[in-house]
Length: 81
Image (cartoon, rainbow, N blue to C red):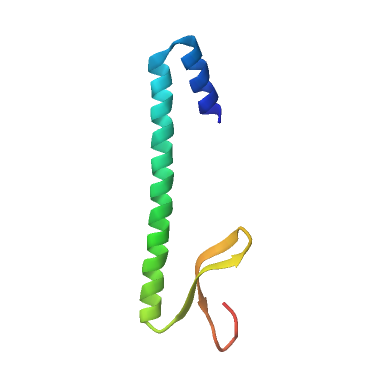
């Protein structure tokens, strides 16, 4: 939000180069966040697949509300993760 407000100020003051620089920095930040999140999901899925292949009982996204693990191994003897 702060960068957006700075962008609005630069546009209203006519500083085109500063405004473009701010837009560019916003685009870079967004791409990095998306890429990291995508990689995280791919890694969890890869580990999940390998553990299932080895015979483990595994679940993705285990938890409550906003507190979740990417994956968890279930212990059927103990009846818990």
